[in-house]
Length: 497
Ligand code: MCA
Ligand code: AMP
Image (cartoon, rainbow, N blue to C red; front, side, top):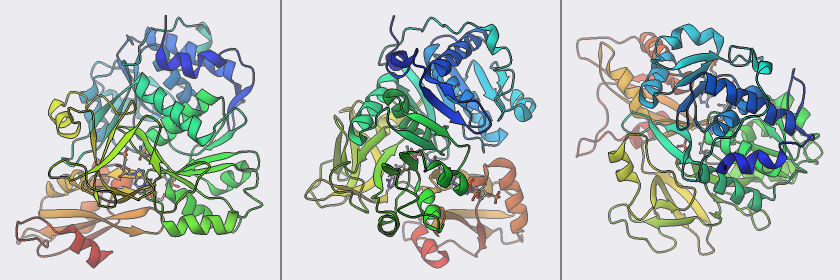
């Protein structure tokens, strides 16, 4: 009997009484207590109808119980599919119809609206305080569960990532995709059981879910689970912690607080940044204030982590470092797919044990982005320095990254274009001191109609998660286009940034 991921993450510490995870308002749990709760939850999942390979969709507040549910799904042979808690019912309905899960776990307050779109999935609830139908009879179940066999090539997770066509794609990630990456990161970042991680990221994306949790479980790190990014909580936690993983917004917000000093961070060993570009000036300002060099790394939902600045060597601001162990990165000409000379800018492609198996039920999209040779075409443009540091210099995909969340303009434009009185729209990102980029929508009304921006905002609010809402609407007579008729978003960015 073997389960590739579970056996590496949980089995070695299943009897360990050392403290593992804490969350305000809840008793601390040891590794053993955590593993037992995960086993009980695995029984609940099986009772609810989860068979090996079934998807378990979770849209629930961040809790210790949700972390255990992730492990329970793996132990029960299921495929974990977490969703951003900000997604509206329309958005969740798409994921449910595409992934056809056997179980949906959601917050009690949303049970009714989500049950209406859940199809045949059994709906269970999990609330912010850990209560709900998922956990209510937990102690009736055995703390032992006969782990379901799963090989390295079996699916462990399906993570949706939005696309340039506006339709989200489910990235199929195997047990080995996740485990190989966690191993590479633990080795490189020298993560050990002496570490304590401040976990303030959401657990529905790769960063907070896999980079943070899988490495912590693998190395036996203590987890200080925070439900969100709160400066008071972070400064309090830094006294005992050794590591923080965050998006650039974490670091600009820390820098905006006078409490950020060398003294306040003296117990910390490592600050990691990723998911969006960290400005070189943020990097330098952080060093000046604390003496710590932030370690920036680069990854994607489809690939987990790809490159990282070195632990011991020079952490170079404005670069994302070197490829991780066993991962190949090449920079190619987007037209020919041929590698370009070092120093030239091209498409970043990646191959290795980290690369996903393709998009769920989308063979054409998979074929377009995953070459027969195993190289995945990231859509990011980059260049290697002579000494092998990769810098990301742009994106060939029309994508906005706001506070570490990816937003594809097409999805918002589709909603706007449907509204009466809107002839066409163009959504673009402009620099923002807090979120890195902020969303703006340019609207061209029908000649006969006058559009009311408040009405536009109301429709968008009903259909799309808050982080996708344009911060501003600009009404114009026509969109700037090039001779090919393509909207020139760079001109819009220049005018309205
Ligand atoms: C919150 N709001 C946002 C965002 N977050 N708007 C745009 N972009 C956002 N990211 C909205 C809120 O709903 C609120 O709206 C208003 O902005 C102010 O919220 P605030 O309280 O200041 O925000 P927050 O709750 O403190 O959240 C900011 C945050 C959070 C901490 C940066 O967005 C966050 O945790 N981001 C991390 C995302 C992440 O994990 N990315 C990893 C993806 P209102 O005023 O109307 O209430 S994985 C990935 O990208 C790859 C694989 C990788 O390499 O890691
Ligand atoms: P996602 O599709 O949500 O997994 O986001 C992945 C994208 O985030 C990548 O394709 C990059 O464009 C971006 N990204 C991740 N890490 C970094 C980084 N350190 N610097 C710049 N962009 C990054």
